[in-house]
Image 1: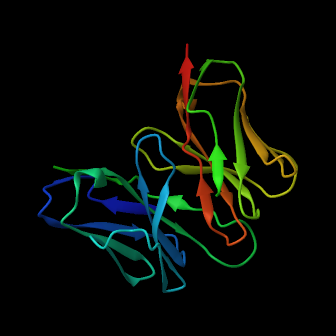
Image 2: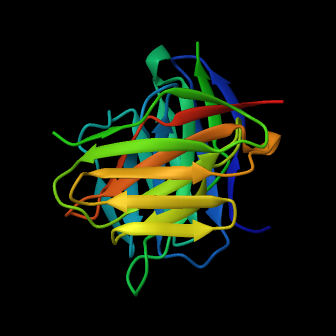
Length: 115
Length: 109
């Protein structure tokens, strides 16, 4: 496995379900991100784990809960979601610090549909 | 507030040249990125500009004018595989990435 892998690629859930999205990076990066991508809208940063410190976007509803057990794995736990949460959820990683640009490497995303 | 503007959709012909513009208003500037995203796939990094001028990478070039808050991505010798969305993003003074909504490029034979 190389790059950033996300599972599942597609998820359909009811509003009362609990599910989790998983992300794994094989690049040795020290930062990982969750983004929400909705049609014709800019990417919305949800959560960042950088150098093992969580940076939270305060506008993210509590029904989304991130978990980063180590520098290679990132989860997004979902519960009691709303239909408007239907979107593509992208995971990304990068190497923070050092010289050069902070280039993100993205996974292919998890397409979430909330019924 | 912070804002990135880019056209929603553009159409071009195979073999031609297309320029995708991006204008930005951000709190500070620490670089501008272009990413390409094919439908159903991950965004992939194309270019990074932090100084004014043109950066060329094969068929793709990216230009930056910091004084004008303006960048463009130039794609030459268009191929059908260049059909994708192109995302512009600016890193602000807090090193946060501000994203545009993306430009969907359609290539016609």
